[in-house]
Image 1: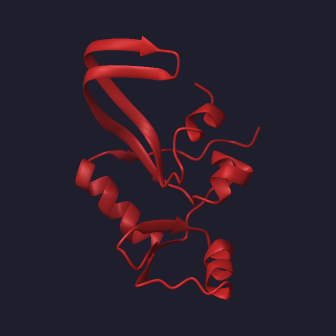
Image 2 (image 1 turned 180 degrees about the vertical axis):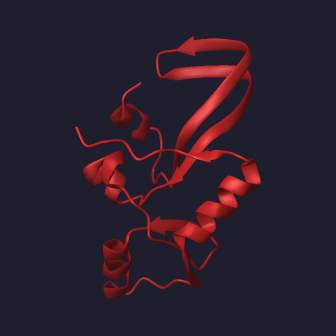
Length: 117
């Protein structure tokens, strides 16, 4: 499935990755469904950049916590833009800390950054 088709299924992607599927696996038009699944590789992405530039330019610098607790990964430029527009965050944490905790929680490797097309 292409990156563009994957992105249509979510409003604001925050984590991109690959998943291991096993047991009964059924192929569909938009991907797969399986009896069992577990993440293999994960990567935080700036949810604004991924729409505009694609996966190869969606680096995440911080993870901001919104007023209602939602976590939003952003690059430095989109964090600055959000703050200039008056968006309020409860906290802003370095992405490397959140990414490290995410990888540690699932005991998986990071998804490598793809080369630009």
